[in-house]
Length: 300
Image 1: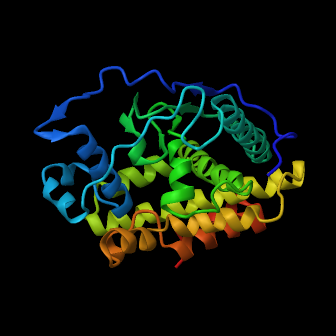
Image 2: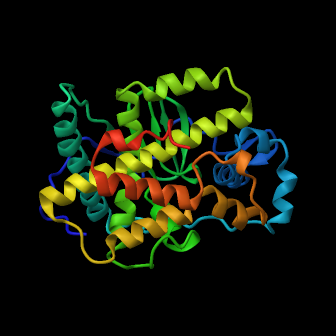
């Protein structure tokens, strides 16, 4: 992935190393912070509200414990890049989404309002509550910001085997993660997220999960739409980039994550879609370049 031609965004907020103001760093309800982080990770992977797990920490005995995460050396990130280089990368990806979605919205007579992206380490505050690194990247519609601990990129490379560790093609896989979250912002601007959230209040857990899967798959497709137009404008893709992104999409499919963590698959607990679905919808957006091709809610 070539970054030299991509525009830079000035909407990246770098909070790494600052520490989360007011974050409870001791023990909560008898459960240590490290345990809570592990439980959040389990909940994220299985599509379960982590709060349902905090009261049942005995499930950790089945995992044999987990080592504490080491802190990156000063001036570096857990993703293995110098801190300023990682910020430059994130700024380039976010800047390219601003250009493309501005143009796409303008063609429909709409105005695109770009989100901000908060880079943090460990945990931070958001308008949607505390953001912890183990939760993975997420978009908060309340403040229209994307929250990203770049340690998640290391998880893609090592824990989830999303792309070959250290390979240049991992950058496009990382860009896919960022542009998926930008896709959620696009959904918010188009009114999709508020409509879905309202509908989920009237549904049981299984039906609400199914609706959430469609939201996530649409964000995958919108990430593909970005890649389609960015490649047309800047020719920034290199051999192996798309394959690495698809390997990542497959690696973080609900079925694969469930199989890795519990040994079996529970489709009713899916919240992001299967590996096959995530790959298929990203490629749908990449090939078509049209938002209209991302109607996951009508697809069977």
